[in-house]
Length: 147
Image 1 (cartoon, helix red, strand yellow):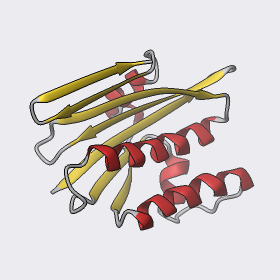
Image 2 (image 1 turned 90 degrees about the vertical axis):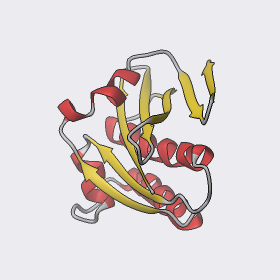
Image 3 (image 1 turned 120 degrees about the horizontal axis):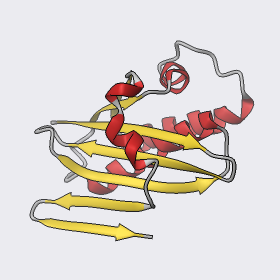
């Protein structure tokens, strides 16, 4: 079983926003996540979205055997750096890159990072424009948390 995760982020003058959507193997949304973060660069926000997405996946997956992920983002820089196609030139981004690699190795995840055009990332993008919320579907239970 594999999961698909879509991430997006936006950096504003006073804050950053993250949007995450997690789908199961049947292409059903099992979690949507929107979070407001402190002010940071757009690239830092995009990396933060990946970190938050992986951490959220670990919470919602139904068993540790569920470890195969296709993670989609419209950030060419982040995806290509995670795939080692681009060098990391900004020293601050090493922290985020290393954090992602730590999460993957500590949780024995198998992650494929895939770049997609912005037009194919509309659901995650729409979450960057909403109030902070987490929506999780677990079998028949649903939970919505607004903060």
